[in-house]
Amino acid sequence: MMPPTEPVFSDTQLPPRVDVVVIGGGIVGVSAAYFLANSGRSVALVEKGRIAHEQSSRNWGWCRTQNRDERELPLQLVSMELWDSLPKAIGADMGFRRNGLVYATKSEKELATWSAWIDMARIYQVHNRVLTPAETKALTPGNEQDWIGGIQAPTDGRAEPTMAAPALAKAARSLGVTLLQDCAVRGLDIAGGRIAGVITERGRIAADRVLCAGGAWASMFCRRHGINLPQAGIRSTVFATTPGPQVTKGGLVTPDFILTPRLDGSYIVAAENRGNLQVTPQGIRYASKFWPTFVERHKSVRVSVGSSLFTGPEALVGKWSFDAPSPFERHRVYAPPPDPRVAGPALQKLKSVYPALSGVGVGGIWAGWIDLTPDSIPVISPVDALPGFFLATGFSGHGFGIGPAAGKLAAELIAGDAPCVNPKPFRYSRLVDGSNLRSGSM
Ligand SMILES: Cc1cc2nc3c(=O)[nH]c(=O)nc-3n(C[C@H](O)[C@H](O)[C@H](O)COP(=O)(O)OP(=O)(O)OC[C@H]3O[C@@H](n4cnc5c(N)ncnc54)[C@H](O)[C@@H]3O)c2cc1C
Image (tube, rainbow, N blue to C red; front, top):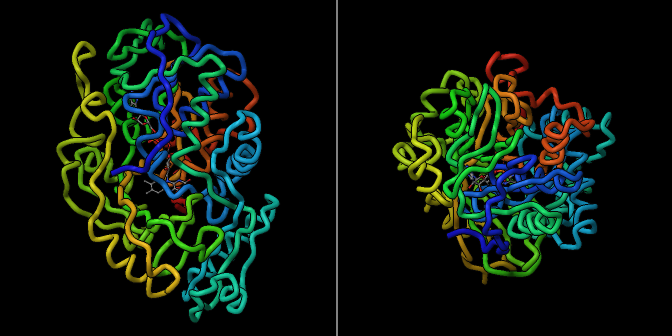
C-alpha cells in the first residue's frame, strides 16, 4: 500500500514549447516548478505517475536541522523559512508544524556525536540542546528509561508528506505551470550538443532548459544519454499505526524505534534506522564509489538480493527507443514491497513501552526507494557537458525537509538568478572527478 496522497488535477494538452521542462513531481520537482513560474518562466512539470507517489509521500515528514551534513545546513535553514512562509503564500496547509524533535540514548558515543554536531551548528545560529538524563526523561513521558542523555531540536518539525508536494503542485499550476501526470519523459531531445527539449510518451516539448528531479530514476535516465550519475538505492520500510492518544508532541528517536506523530493522531513508526541495500546492476556498477560509505554504515544497512535486481530504477537498462514504452512507463509508481519483518516486533515494543497505545494497530505499511549519492548530499547543479541540462537528485534519505529550498535553488540556477546559498557543495562534477567526496550524516 501507499499513504493516501492528496490528488492533483492534470492538464491534458502538451505545450509545444516552454522555457523549462521539469521531470519528476516529487517535492523537489514541484518546488522547482513553483519557483520558476513565480519568477515568470513558462514551465511544464512532467510526472510519469502521480504527484508525490514515490519517495515524497512515503517518508516520515521530518524537517530537521539536527544531524544534517554541515554542507547542507545553510540550504536547510532556507527550507525551514519556506516551510513557515509557503503555506501563507499558496493559501494551503502543508501540514508543517514546528513541534520539535527529541533524541534519547543510552550510548555515550551517540550522545558525543550529537553534541559535537550541536557545537558545530551554533555558528549557523542553530540552538539545539544537549539534555541531561533527567531532562531526557522529562521529555519522554511514559518511556522513561535509563537514558544517559539526549538532545532536543526545539524548532525542528514535521510536514505532512501526503499534503505538501500536492499543495505546492496545485499552487504551481495556478501560476501557469502545465502539469502532466501519467506522462513519462522517455528522453532528452538534444540538438547541436545542447538541450532542445524532451520526448515524452505523448510527444515532444521544446525547451532550452530541462531539470531532471527524477529521484531514484535519475541515474538510469542520465545513463541513456551517456551521463554518469553514481546513485545507489536503499529500500526503507515504515508502518503507520491507527490513531491513538498523543504520547509525544514531536518526533522521537529512541534505540527501539523512531516515532513520528501525524496530524490525524496516528504515528509513523520506523523500527530502527536501518535500510535494505538490494544488490542491483547499477549498485554493482558504482560499488567502488559507495564502498567507503557502506563500510562506515554497515551496521545500519542490511544487504539482500530482491526483485530490484531485474526490475525497477536500478535494473540493467541503458538503451531504449524513444518511440516505444520506456522503463519509466512500465513503473508508473515504483512501490518496492515493504519488509514484512518490520511491523510486528516494533508494534509490540511500542505497546509495551506506551500502555496508552495498547489499542492501536497497523494502519498501513509501505516502503520507499531512497536515492543515495556517494557522499550522501544531493546534486543540485547544471551538467556542464550538456548545456541546458540540470539535475536536482540524490537526496540520500533526507530530501523532504530540504525539498522546498532545493527546488528553489535549482530554479535559481536554471534562471541564472542569484542563488539563495552557495551551490558549490552540490555541484555535479564532484561525483565524477572525485573532488569534495566525503561521507556526511544521513
Ligand atoms: C521511508 C522513508 C523515510 C524518509 N524520511 C524522511 C524524512 O523524515 N525527512 C526527509 O527530509 N526525508 C526523508 N526521506 C527522503 C525523502 O522522502 C526524499 O529524499 C525526497 O522525497 C526526494 O524527493 P524527490 O522529489 O527528489 O524524489 P521523489 O519524491 O522520489 O520524486 C521523483 C519523481 O520523479 C518521477 N520520475 C522519475 N523519472 C521520470 C521520468 N522519466 N518521467 C517522468 N517522471 C519521472 C517519479 O515518478 C517520482 O514521482 C525518507 C524516505 C523514505 C523512503
